[in-house]
Every structure is written in structure tokens, then in C-alpha cells.
Image (cartoon, rainbow, N blue to C red; front, side, top):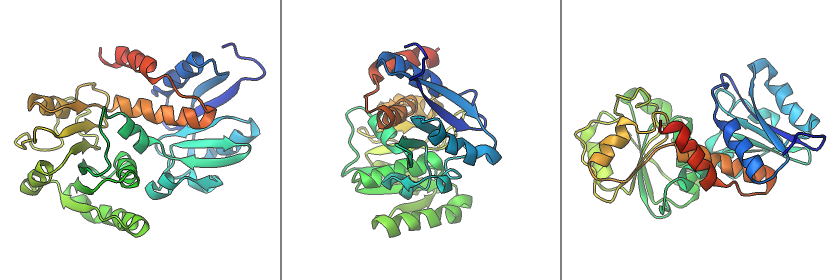
Length: 285
């Protein structure tokens, strides 16, 4: 598709962002679906965020994606928020609906779409961490009908995490269990009784560290997932596979959250199978 007077723009906004894989994903999708669009990465200072959002209307853009540190800071500049964005308290996708700017968070939907043949409805989950990715996964799990969730964080973070979980309970009526990661016997008991174990921390990006003790035993049918996609095979995933468990890395979450945003902008389905193969070639090396 050649750039012309009808080409519409989308972008990812963050700082830093030049390393982002999002332009590769979305421009591949524009090309594959013959959509006249271009996707860029904008490294924006905090003082320029309001003007950047105003430019979505000014230039009749599809919208923008947001990454750190702007997922929360963008909210005051938007007209509406989706249900999941309200629950999470963060936005990763802004959609321009004829001048009305609507904030969504597609991270949680993207995560669950990346899990092959797994539905969270009626299931039990152990979630490691309580940062941005964890909040998105947790809120989406509640919206999708999860039956029970245990969130495990380091003991020093318990009191920092509790207010968000109380806010979620007030808004959804769903009570999340919170416990300290250092309590290995409690962690083991929760995992034995669960269907899904998710590492939503950054532990493992160094290619060496495990987010939980290697002594933990996994039940046979437990699905294990990591939000990290680089390295492609984290120590956590390798540990789980060595116990015979199916394990999924974070590259699918990255792809499917982008696919959700692409559909919101264009009304078209992203050809995820095709782009997945391209991504694997980039990250499996």
C-alpha cells in the first residue's frame, strides 16, 4: 500500500519506545489487510502528552497505543473509558471515533487469546506480581468469569498491593486472595489447586532468575504462562516444561493485544497466524 493523501496514521507513544516491535506488527497487518495506514513509534516527553493526544483528533488518526510511563497519565485527556480500562486504571489503546477519544486496555484480552484451547471462565489462577501486566490480566480474568484468583507478591509489596485489590472487589464484587511470595508452603498449596500459573513479573528477563523457588511442584494439568517474550524461553518456562507442563511465553500476548487494537481501529481482523510466524523468526534466534 503506497502512502497517499488518504493514508491514516497510528502510533505507539512512550518513553523510551524506539525498541518497540509494535510498528513491525501493525505495519505488517496494514499491508496484509490492504489497509491504507502507517504506524510509527513516538518517543514523547511527559510535557507533550496532552498535545500528542490532541493530535489524534487534529490529524484524524486511527488512534494510538501507549506504553510506560503513560498508560495512566493519558486518562485525563480522554473522553470515555472502556469497562476493562476503568477496572485496570490504565489505557494501552486510544481509539478515535469521529473525534471522540475512547481508552481501552487490550492487554488482558490479548493475554487470554494467546493461551491455546484455554478458557479462564470457571477456572482457578495463581498470578505472580501486581504491576501493570498483572492488573490487566487480573481484571480481564474477573470480567471473563474466573472462579478464584491468588495473587502472590513479595511481602514488602503486600500493603502497596492491597488497595488495588480492594478497589477491584468494590467495583466487581470479586474477592482476590493476596499472599506473600516468600510463603512457599502457601504458594505450593495454591498452585496444586489451580488451572493456570502466570508470571506477570519481570523476573527472568536476565535469562537466569526464577520468580518462584525451583522446589515447587506443578500439577500435571496446570498451564504455565510468562508475560516475558525476550528471552523467548525464560528460565520459568524451561523449569515448567521440564516438569512436563505446557508453557506459553509472552510473545502471543504482545501479538493479540495488538490484534485487539487493530480491530478497534480498522474493523478488520489482524492476520495473527501470518504475523506470528514472522515474530517467531525474529525472537527465536
